[in-house]
Length: 357
Image: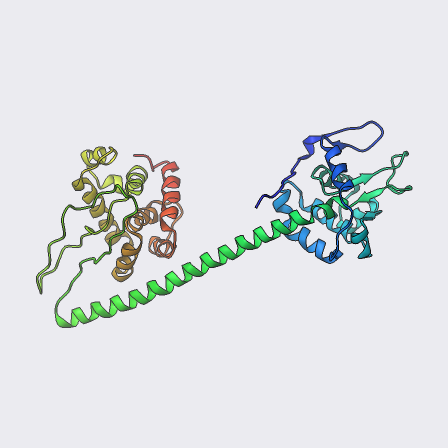
């Protein structure tokens, strides 16, 4: 959708001797007025509704007062036939507008000037520089001429709102599935405990973000024999190199758990699997000793988000102002776009005083 934005701030005004200030595009504004001959199926209430919803999209530099003044001017069109005929002159004075808005007349003049600069009104003056004489007044034809733009902007905003609702619904659905998986995993763990076999391995699906990434550990994990406790591995997850680099560069907690040789290797173009495994081990240690998230929740999050989940652990412990790392981590893991979330947070941590490698 091509939305016309005629946003011109007050600095774009120039003075005309004997008359009020005019915009540099005043000629275009007059042409916009002259091109309007009337519109059907329009009421004052519908125009007010469009302006209220969509004008900020077309002219973002308008102040709240200027929008309020424009709505008051539109409300002075009492006859619906005025929209059809194109006779849209209204005559409220600055003093009256000031009384209606609770502002002073100087503020009203600035608001009218801004509305004209953004091609929403034309102030018509008589030879004596008054708006109340003869054919003078405030011409609202620019608003009527831009009704199509306002409708398009309103539809655009409604689509954005609907998209946000769908995203929120998807995140709520993710939370429901996460809770369901957590309950199932808890029941399974309880059954294992009753049978005397405790399996704390981390079952993971393949989660490949970057096509050129390599596996965290070469080859498959060794199978645990019945009754034997297996070591937690994340060998099924493909490395997200961007997230790995940001983790190492930003997280002071992670940096303290890695050797100088590992840090040097991880900052290079092709980190070896041993260094990557050291990062994974450091994250697991942090998760176990500083956050203590429930294992069932972590298994589901790891399977769903991959390396973004590992990065979220470091964000939870290193982000300034986080008082409850476990709660903060749990809230992040609900996000349908966790990767974008952790990238933003890791860059923020990097700006902290202690966040540089």
